[in-house]
Length: 133
Image (tube, rainbow, N blue to C red; front, side, top):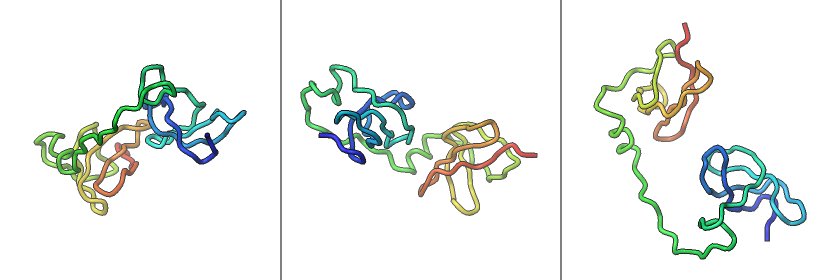
Protein backbone atom coordinates (compact mmCIF):
# COMPACT_ATOMS: atom_id res chain seq x y z
CA UNK A 1 0.00 0.00 0.00
CA UNK A 2 1.35 3.39 -1.01
CA UNK A 3 0.92 6.70 0.80
CA UNK A 4 2.05 10.27 0.17
CA UNK A 5 5.38 10.77 1.91
CA UNK A 6 6.13 7.05 1.83
CA UNK A 7 8.94 5.39 -0.08
CA UNK A 8 8.77 3.36 -3.28
CA UNK A 9 11.41 1.91 -5.60
CA UNK A 10 11.22 3.60 -8.99
CA UNK A 11 13.36 4.19 -12.06
CA UNK A 12 15.03 7.62 -11.86
CA UNK A 13 15.43 9.21 -15.29
CA UNK A 14 18.26 11.48 -14.09
CA UNK A 15 20.30 8.82 -12.23
CA UNK A 16 19.23 6.12 -14.72
CA UNK A 17 18.93 3.62 -11.87
CA UNK A 18 16.21 1.99 -9.81
CA UNK A 19 16.38 3.88 -6.51
CA UNK A 20 14.27 4.74 -3.48
CA UNK A 21 11.86 7.62 -4.10
CA UNK A 22 9.48 9.61 -1.90
CA UNK A 23 5.87 9.62 -3.11
CA UNK A 24 4.50 13.13 -3.80
CA UNK A 25 1.15 12.28 -5.40
CA UNK A 26 -1.16 9.27 -5.75
CA UNK A 27 -3.91 8.51 -8.26
CA UNK A 28 -6.22 5.58 -7.55
CA UNK A 29 -3.82 4.34 -4.90
CA UNK A 30 -0.79 4.23 -7.26
CA UNK A 31 2.13 6.70 -7.18
CA UNK A 32 2.11 9.19 -10.06
CA UNK A 33 4.67 11.78 -8.91
CA UNK A 34 7.84 10.91 -6.97
CA UNK A 35 11.08 12.53 -5.81
CA UNK A 36 14.39 10.68 -6.06
CA UNK A 37 15.99 10.40 -2.63
CA UNK A 38 19.45 10.50 -4.25
CA UNK A 39 19.38 13.42 -6.74
CA UNK A 40 16.09 15.03 -5.56
CA UNK A 41 14.65 15.18 -9.08
CA UNK A 42 10.84 15.25 -9.08
CA UNK A 43 9.31 13.27 -11.95
CA UNK A 44 6.44 10.95 -12.82
CA UNK A 45 6.56 7.47 -11.34
CA UNK A 46 8.31 4.91 -13.53
CA UNK A 47 7.94 1.32 -12.45
CA UNK A 48 11.23 -0.58 -12.30
CA UNK A 49 11.82 -2.70 -15.42
CA UNK A 50 10.84 -6.39 -15.20
CA UNK A 51 13.57 -8.60 -13.82
CA UNK A 52 15.05 -5.87 -11.60
CA UNK A 53 15.04 -5.95 -7.83
CA UNK A 54 12.43 -3.20 -7.49
CA UNK A 55 9.89 -4.72 -9.89
CA UNK A 56 6.72 -5.89 -8.09
CA UNK A 57 6.99 -9.43 -9.53
CA UNK A 58 10.68 -9.87 -8.78
CA UNK A 59 11.86 -12.26 -6.13
CA UNK A 60 13.50 -10.52 -3.26
CA UNK A 61 17.13 -11.47 -2.93
CA UNK A 62 18.93 -10.91 0.33
CA UNK A 63 20.17 -7.34 0.43
CA UNK A 64 23.84 -6.81 0.96
CA UNK A 65 25.31 -3.44 1.79
CA UNK A 66 27.63 -2.19 -0.93
CA UNK A 67 31.16 -1.36 0.09
CA UNK A 68 31.32 2.31 0.99
CA UNK A 69 34.49 4.21 0.28
CA UNK A 70 35.55 6.70 2.91
CA UNK A 71 36.15 10.34 2.09
CA UNK A 72 39.94 9.90 2.32
CA UNK A 73 39.85 7.06 -0.23
CA UNK A 74 37.80 9.23 -2.60
CA UNK A 75 40.30 12.06 -2.27
CA UNK A 76 43.21 9.68 -2.83
CA UNK A 77 41.57 8.33 -5.99
CA UNK A 78 41.53 11.82 -7.54
CA UNK A 79 45.24 11.67 -8.29
CA UNK A 80 48.54 12.79 -6.91
CA UNK A 81 48.20 16.45 -7.92
CA UNK A 82 48.50 18.82 -4.96
CA UNK A 83 45.27 20.49 -3.82
CA UNK A 84 44.57 23.92 -5.26
CA UNK A 85 43.36 26.76 -3.03
CA UNK A 86 39.75 27.75 -3.79
CA UNK A 87 39.22 31.12 -5.40
CA UNK A 88 36.13 32.34 -7.27
CA UNK A 89 38.50 33.56 -10.01
CA UNK A 90 40.15 30.17 -10.57
CA UNK A 91 38.74 27.62 -13.02
CA UNK A 92 38.31 24.02 -11.91
CA UNK A 93 37.69 20.71 -13.66
CA UNK A 94 35.93 17.57 -12.46
CA UNK A 95 38.27 15.59 -10.20
CA UNK A 96 40.37 18.58 -9.05
CA UNK A 97 41.22 18.56 -5.33
CA UNK A 98 40.46 21.90 -3.67
CA UNK A 99 41.38 23.47 -0.33
CA UNK A 100 38.67 25.86 0.91
CA UNK A 101 39.24 28.26 3.81
CA UNK A 102 35.98 27.38 5.58
CA UNK A 103 34.90 23.93 4.32
CA UNK A 104 38.37 22.32 4.18
CA UNK A 105 39.58 19.88 1.54
CA UNK A 106 37.25 18.57 -1.12
CA UNK A 107 37.08 17.51 -4.74
CA UNK A 108 35.17 18.82 -7.75
CA UNK A 109 32.34 16.39 -8.44
CA UNK A 110 30.46 18.31 -11.18
CA UNK A 111 30.37 21.50 -13.23
CA UNK A 112 27.12 23.47 -13.37
CA UNK A 113 25.89 26.33 -15.57
CA UNK A 114 29.36 27.24 -16.83
CA UNK A 115 30.33 29.42 -13.87
CA UNK A 116 29.44 27.11 -10.97
CA UNK A 117 31.20 24.07 -9.60
CA UNK A 118 29.91 21.35 -7.26
CA UNK A 119 32.53 20.46 -4.64
CA UNK A 120 32.19 17.46 -2.32
CA UNK A 121 33.63 18.16 1.12
CA UNK A 122 33.80 15.76 4.05
CA UNK A 123 30.67 17.26 5.64
CA UNK A 124 28.58 18.39 2.67
CA UNK A 125 28.36 19.10 -1.06
CA UNK A 126 28.53 22.79 -1.94
CA UNK A 127 27.86 24.66 -5.18
CA UNK A 128 30.38 27.48 -5.54
CA UNK A 129 31.28 29.94 -8.30
CA UNK A 130 34.45 29.64 -10.36
CA UNK A 131 36.02 31.37 -13.34
CA UNK A 132 34.75 34.82 -12.36
CA UNK A 133 36.87 37.79 -13.41
